[in-house]
Image 1 (spheres, rainbow, N blue to C red):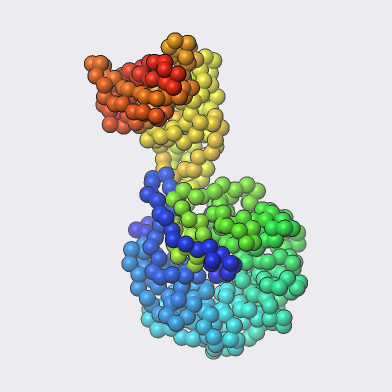
Image 2 (image 1 turned 90 degrees about the vertical axis):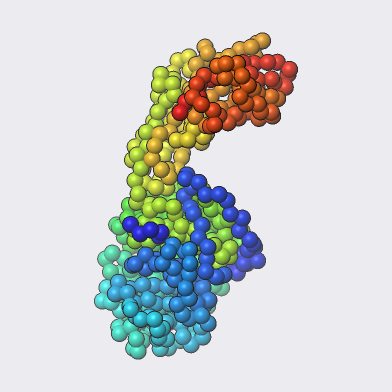
Length: 487
């Protein structure tokens, strides 16, 4: 395991601002990486674990983004990066007359390939016979020698369409998504079954397609920019090679899709064609339902995803000039033990083995004479007060469903309240009363903590033992209860 591991709407550029970072926690999905420059259009992780970034120029980092080196093409906007299995690095650019640049393995020199077009190099693909494909604003170009010989195998005569993505399926079929920017019916999904020599439009002509992906069974996913007024879908799925399509996510623009080795989908979405971004989502059921991966990502103004071979997920964009990376590989597994406290307080569901970033569905049911009060994590921090909830797994350990005995609910002067969890590890929560002041006494009768105007008592610094909690409420009543602090 290594030590670290454009295509967007111009209007969002006006919304870009500074990123307010937050402290990273062990339960966050994301960690942030300082970018080498502004305006990041593309990112890959090469076979050696180096992060390669395309901005104005190509940058490389061998230490997880701690330091960066400019490795060429400083006068070009690098719209797409691609590394071949032999180590050749390709860069699609917006530098007029030179839409594709190549750097061979072991070399530091870049060579402009003589593709016969002056439009931008937007997408890159490789066929089963190892021919190189380049998608541009006027069609698809093919080279069998990766150098001097190029053929225009698909021509867009309207000059309003962009070949936004190229994808090779497991059966060797090549797909090309064509975005008709003026909505004149010139777009659609193209298919080639002869290594890019000929192309057939297989549908989705009126959809504004921006990205393609497939899973291990060659289920095809197409991400689109949507029309919020018409509630057009942001995601299409086909299990029969484009003969029929299912649509999902109305009015949610899907800018980028990644699929891991477990056929889990990751998608970058935002709410509508001209609206604020929504974030990165995860689906384990083929796009039917989605969970938001937002922990550790304070600013979701991103445009693309990249999944490394060993399972590190990157999210990046030209708008907030930020790079995020999953803290761990999405293939890393954790064992979760879901327990009840006290043990006879109720029954719980949710134990099992989970991958990093997977969501556990937790359920708690109280036994007779008990009531459920909340879920706490491995540190004793509350994660939910709902009996049924979902919790993203970022580490192994124990999740606790806390119950209190109804018969043991403390009553003082006719006032009922609950303190939980009991025993406590980090924090005690007070429910059922508006707290003015709370004091905690040790076994010697000494006041060891006084807090005001809060229903949470931090006990992380207290030694293990039994304590008396004295509460003065907003009605002038004094309530007391005993609680155990455990270590």
